Image (cartoon, rainbow, N blue to C red; front, side, top):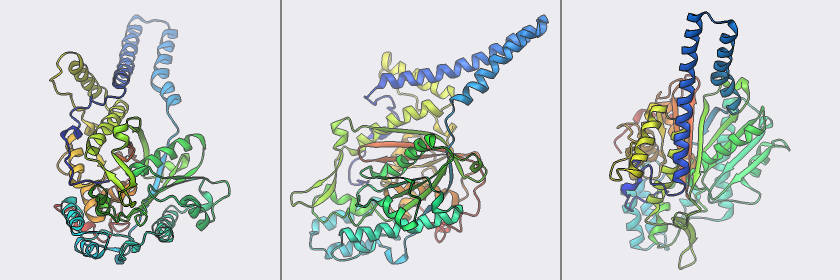
Length: 491
């Protein structure tokens, strides 16, 4: 979601990483425990090497060498092997390129809006102001139903839109990966605002004649973070169901979410949301490692729905005239900042080097108990992460998150260019960002990519992917094929 007209508080920055007020002591404990374990492992290695040197000099019996070797094997090889989870590979993914007749230049959007009787002059002027600062370009897309005057938001139109955005990417993914619909063991379809019966996953199963025992799920009401959450869900399912393929389809159906009223807090989503969808193939098959693009390195999911203020920050409801829309409250960015800080704390404890965790832990303790005016040390995530896919929820929010994470000048490029070219595509935007990086040749073998999904609830899900092989020949394929040479631009 976006709200470019709303103020973005400085609290969204990562500087106050310790301010999340739900469970701070448990999070601090996780930081310290993780660091302590790293120190113990390194200390054990140093001790083993020192003792081995002494044993050699003192010419001790071979049994002592055997005991030391056993300790070394357990601490550094056997124990990590048994504690490691089932690997999850991203074989490939596809993004939907809408047809040209769905393009909606900003001037056309405003011209059509001015002809819709349900909008008064103030509403149109407000949407014009939002679009001016939104970061959207002139080639974003809306579904055919929203090109009509007045827009069509009937059930059948939404079904047509769902088939329009989901069926082609499913076909493209199957073609890319050379698998059959019969090979798919798990199917997850996420769409926040449209939940038909039969479900979206049932539509896909019917159209592609999938197996009768395919495990299918439809996620709704999960907001822009649903695409990342669906991957996290697929990962957990793949831990249980061995030797399986899982397909995740992410989209948002816009024709059912159009708001035809006057309340400004509900008009925001009309301006920023645009067409988009993505299909992702995951697997836990060992033989897939050689052909897959990425391996899931880490996944962290957090939420703050337990807190009333956070829960109500973005809410789908009727206005005074009974028209349904999503209300964006003025504190939504503060709420997002809190859920993001909470998520980053846990992610940092998982992936950051021991020294980064140590200095952050020390500065947190110092601020909490000794020097409360002292700034918290912001860990350098770039010591682990090479590329960042940020939420495309408006240009100000992208830049604020990048600033908070202390990213470089061009490290928010993928998010800003995706927002400009395709708009906010809700849960599928993150995959257009990754497609942008691949088309630009940015991602190299061994690189780690942080995919950050945030949505209503509020909720946050971080996925860190490790690139397994060279990514080549992507500039001529996918959604960026006809425009990648024009980017980056100054948004």
